Length: 140
Image (cartoon, rainbow, N blue to C red; front, side, top):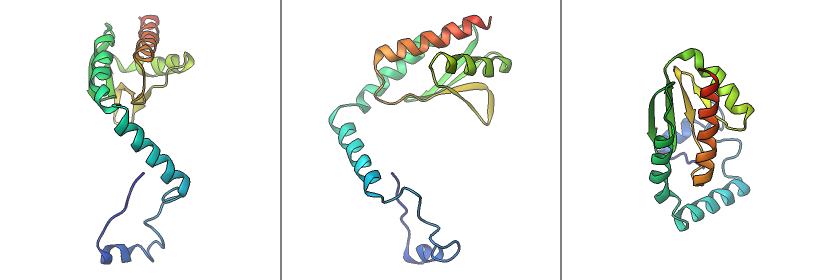
């Protein structure tokens, strides 16, 4: 969910050029608003954010392989740098075929992105990383 907040004169600029340029397809819809409220209630009552550091550290501990040069992260948004950019697409393709969704960065052809949901469980982290390591092993 997002919000567009500005002074009246700035908001007026969007009334004509383009007309309604400040709105979105799903913005303000009752279903989207209800989903956002439910998400905020879950995040604030189930200690989801408090568990992110532990999950991030678990990923970092498990993502060890000779073809991995570095793991960078901010919470559960992670960039895993490989030793050779030629490995990137075969790894992504192999991971997706085995059910793990990872993606590349437009600005870095040596790294792939891991961005799991904050509610991922420890078992899911172990399973996902095990698949990634298995695909990396097949690339050696």
